[in-house]
Length: 360
Ligand SMILES: *Cc1c(COP(=O)(O)O)cnc(C)c1O
Image (cartoon, rainbow, N blue to C red):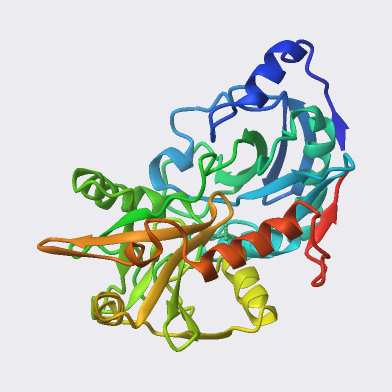
């Protein structure tokens, strides 16, 4: 891969200042990876170059028809100085599935992995070292052909950028409150819900505004047909802990995004001796279950926030709170599986499932 080093990288003092309190998605490293695809030449011109604006013609197809997909994964620094990513091959495979759904060309998995590894190695000084910090990696692909006709683009660009990320819960795990969207849905059968595409996020933002207006941080979406089955949040999957000890997560329905974290949590819970079921979960099972005490914990999971306890579920005319029995903190199963996951990611627990990939 061609590497063009940044002529004026961010100086060390400024970088250390950023890494001391990076937040999320605010600061970007010195470099990015780019690659081009055309019908004639396939994938080519893979390169690392200085991070900076892309110059795009206003008629570039992605601006008009949103033919775009993305991924999200993290690089973690271990105490011995090594740097690792978590299940990157799963992100590569998911990006291929998303590409097929959005009529984009599949990126070969080895090229995806090489792009991510090369960016992390080039900008390794940007991997934060503090507790539960990471370098968030954002691979994405978009229709870069200049053409207003409606058909799959014949020129596509793949890019990877990286952004240092702080601890999501620096002050300890705080339950999030959720707004039940009864008007809007996220994804319908036959739609794009299982693809990680920007369009799904665009379509979720009006519901997100509604959530914010009602004092909630995130939206819960129901299935689009019966408006009865719990699907997921705008960008996280859901788990429910029941008082009989069983744990349930909505089964992949074709309109739910198959989270890598969701899958890892299932495996870890199995290993911790819990019984996990993947099946349909009705919204009444949640509402009535919290009221009756049959549902003892609810948590959301995804790469960015790892495992997040859920507190209030609000809708027009009511709310229930699954965190009151845990004094507004994370319940025991939520805390246990979260710890098990971050211990593997930060190299403090044995990687029994071969999930970690060493980059540096
Ligand atoms: C990315 C995403 C998730 C979480 O997936 P992870 O691989 O665990 O990060 C869940 N739901 C949606 C809609 C997403 O886009």
